[in-house]
Length: 277
Image (tube, rainbow, N blue to C red; front, side, top):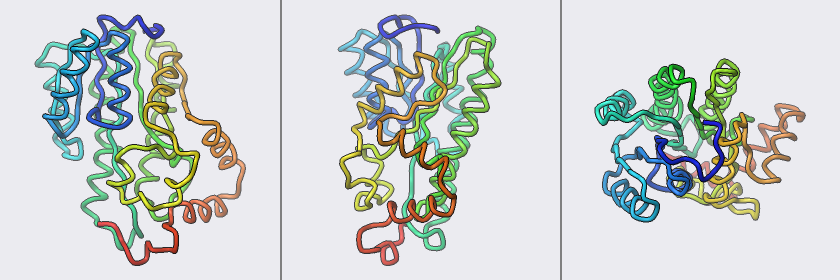
């Protein structure tokens, strides 16, 4: 697996959240390098259409595995489906995730529990299920998508930020555990990115998504993909985001939290009137 772009023929990548945004762009990059694909998302139609397009364009095999990973039974079902197809996973991309905006006292508990299931539990379970075969082959790559949110508390998105802190901590620890095994673990930590995420999280009006530093999903995906191929443990796309993370590491925690609340806020402080549910 110490390969460079263009030498992926015969390998298989499993990508969660593959139907749009960063996940879709990652699928395109893997297919362009000749990797066969296992595409996981909720929409079977979207996966079938994407798989057909990538197969036609790049000559790779694509298998759709529709699953809602916020369902506690879904990760094991995905693993069984892969096993039943007789496919070995060379690269595991845990990209699926969701957010929720609003004051914690006012947001919907079930939505937050499903977010934890998706962002934390499913990522952990899929890694646990697919890692043993990688270890047996002494070859594999894992790419976990976190966020610059992982480096700070996030008032107005308290649970989401906490889930991304878990992804970062878990991934960095696992990378060290696996050093020397032939398996690499890369954390992709993008900042604000133009995808459908902000609309689903009700963040489209926040200051975070209204500035010139917002990146497009294709740029973020390429940074994560190339960093994964190099075996990097942490990839933070964009000069502004890199500088932000460095500043967060040396700034007083209370100040960081206050700044995060201001950035997450909608102009005019309308979060008090529009709790997300």
